[in-house]
Length: 384
Image 1 (cartoon, helix red, strand yellow):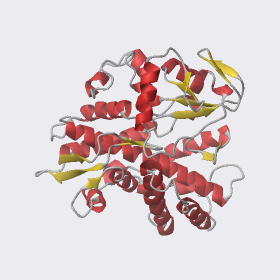
Image 2 (cartoon, rainbow, N blue to C red):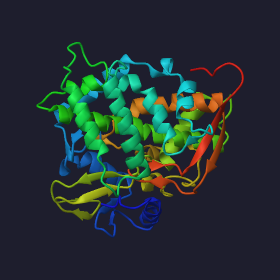
Image 3 (cartoon, one colour):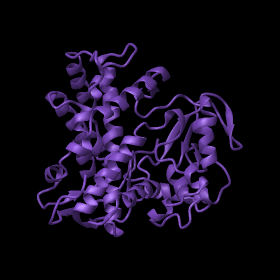
Image 4 (cartoon, rainbow, N blue to C red):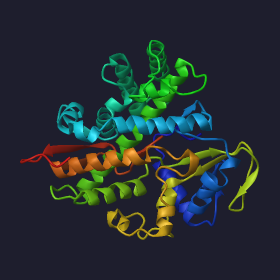
């Protein structure tokens, strides 16, 4: 629709300004209805969800979501898989950072967070004995999640990595069978999904799980560290509660999922605006999160605002969506961000250099181009 530009940040800012001067949804110049009000967004996502085609970022094949019963079972199995692992107790952050630094010891923005989180969730995604599958996942992360969904380098040319990885995963899945004693990783999860899913279908679902788990979480980790370093949270005495507020504020000011898209299944109205069957509705998470009607000094980075948020602010906070289509990463992704954020900010000195001033917006809302350098502090390792 509009992801053929280098970066959408100027568009996001313009839509925020338009939303501030209007009362209710309005149409963008290409016709899509833009929703920038929390109550109207709740109508779309929850109260009137039946007026829209079923939507799931995790569990879908192409544009079509898996049936609700299958998604419900998959979400339950996802939580079980996560419960089987404890990345916080076994993850070696120092080794991971050493592997993703460039030749000058720098962590390149729009890349390093995704690579660290890929390593963090590696046992959850695929058991390390599944070497071929892990190699394919690594290829997918570097050549598609980073290159396409974050940076956007490959969008204008023929891009064959995604189908090639999918074909490779399907071939590997054809040699496996579902675990009878429950899923031990995401590979087992997709192989055990109910319904008539082909190995290619299972491969596509795994790719979407990797994008959602690794891509969104990794980009947010970069924001958390960048903002933490720049605003004085990069200290051995930073508390977990402070990092909790920092994560929430990073997701408010720079929501990685900067928009939620829905397609109308029937004619209806949203906050007085007519919506026709087949029409796209774009919920501007970024605009809702930056509304001066809800947030004091909305463009300022103020983690302290989360010490006593108002009810209206809680309702207007949508980094993971709402309702049936809400991203199930809500819990485990935030826990991972708080854990990694605390380890990095308390255990490493930080230095940030930016080559651009504006965030980079493609599928995900990522930090500006540049790099962060982290140097381990002397003394005992920070508490895990």
